[in-house]
Length: 472
Image (cartoon, rainbow, N blue to C red; front, side, top):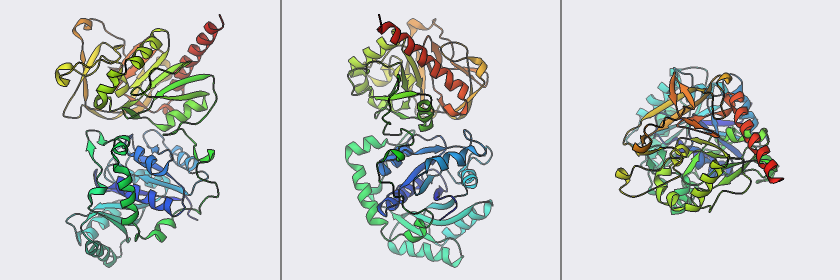
């Protein structure tokens, strides 16, 4: 049995086929009786949803900006407990992020996992050996264990690649993923199109079926040897659902936090849910698209990021849900919103850009406009500002930014300055008002438990106020 069971899938660049190779490994291992946990390097919310679709298990972010030292191996080991191991999808190119110590290489080194390198092989033959050799020798301290060739043209093409690797005594070709329309994963500005959208169109069942066919002749003996024996724990048992993920845990708790979870709102760090549950918060999934109103007896509402702009019609058309959120906030309910969730709190998309009347919650005095280029991207360290439910004395909390939108203040409210929720590099970020915090930031709660505790305290105060009033 390997010392730390699992493999990491790296690539040469973004779009090199890492996600498809990861899905193929996850599916093939599950077909052969191995129960594995998917992981994703870096601050990614899209690829993990595909992992979860394939396995039915929560995909966990592994990020050395958030989890330094022994924290990352400890997180990995905790998440594979009672399972056969993990399959980790890398981020960008294998060495991208070396300067900050957040590259896929750094994660592979920290975990000591063998690496399968996904190589975009279209138009490539013997050069594959030079590429793989260069990647392997660029840095030490890690183990390249095999190659997965993506976008190959034929069986003969795969044989040429395998021979080139063998002649240079390089790690072998594990398998190929040839060009095929059933394996296409469409993209939009933040990455792949959301898994639920593809599921509704029937695309995913075709991908699963085609992966079974195309990976039947892979070197599964080598792949499976990197995992521990199949666990005797039956699939679907409570031990698998260590954190909520796509399926929230059934748990009885007095303090209830609604979490927006549908095609429009999908961007969350699963560890945020985990640490909230550890503090006694019950997570209640809600859908701003399809639920008629907020559930009763909520103490807070967590509006994560996502693609609300692509579901503007269904969000604005759900008038009952919008009204219930406005009433919830007006009556003292706690609201925390990130990126797309913050946009949902606005009056909606810019009318001139959308060429239609679209109104959302209108709690924050602006609309937004989508741009054709990225506005902000990267890791951040945010300092909470006194007010709302944050306190400045707690230090900083880490997270990331990734958005294409910009805010358009409404003329009637241009003089109404809202207090900032944070400062980032000494500049104001986000907004706050009584019982509400909203910003473009995607925060990683475990990076500062003191900040997390203030959120939990706000929920507790709301709970006590709600239960006291219900007794009269």
